[in-house]
Image 1 (cartoon, rainbow, N blue to C red):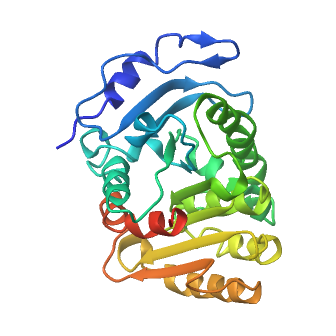
Image 2 (image 1 turned 90 degrees about the vertical axis):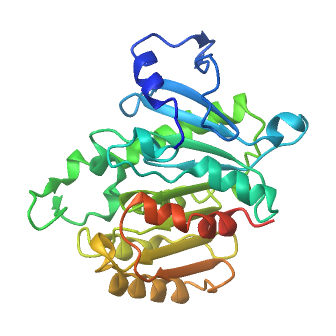
Length: 302
């Protein structure tokens, strides 16, 4: 089992990060033995829009072997769950570094940088698309109290990514910073915020992957929003998938509605849009890890 540095991050995050001008430098130290590639940790990355949080930047092996090469970037949510199962609350993870390295070696994807953005205790407030809420509040789950619209922070969260984090990444790493090479991926509520990003920042993000998208929140409120706000199929690509077990079980009918929206907007299944159903897959990182190659191959097709 891989041993990652997240406990190290939690320890170091109590310290003041080194500063270079207006920017932090990654915490220096020996690379944790379980990581494939290199992971730069940025504890308590600052923001004027949202709470500070840990950010990790994964670099593939050829980032160092080809110093003239520039790389596309994938921004991923729920950063605490991306790298190593031994450090997560449920002992599951996406194992992004392993999957990316394997796909790159097999020539199935372009080599890319992955930026993991940690979730906070305001995960719902940051991931729920605010402008998709039509009333003064939205119901999260039937057995939980509604969340007031003015408590939702997704607009601020996306400003953090677009106006603070992305400029930092582009200025400190050899990125391909254009829209066609800037992507986002997330699962569940992370799928919703990824779709919100490509709808609200179509000049920044060229493609997104929404994995096990949590459509039921607000009874499909985000589908209604996307019906009016999807970006052009001439310049954008979108991936969806869902399982059939646990929390994913009711997603199918909602995804059919979303597929109809995609068709009406001129997207072509199998080209600039893919929807995949994974029979028997549950709503957890183990399931997402098993099929992670599919959205990555869509986003990073050679």
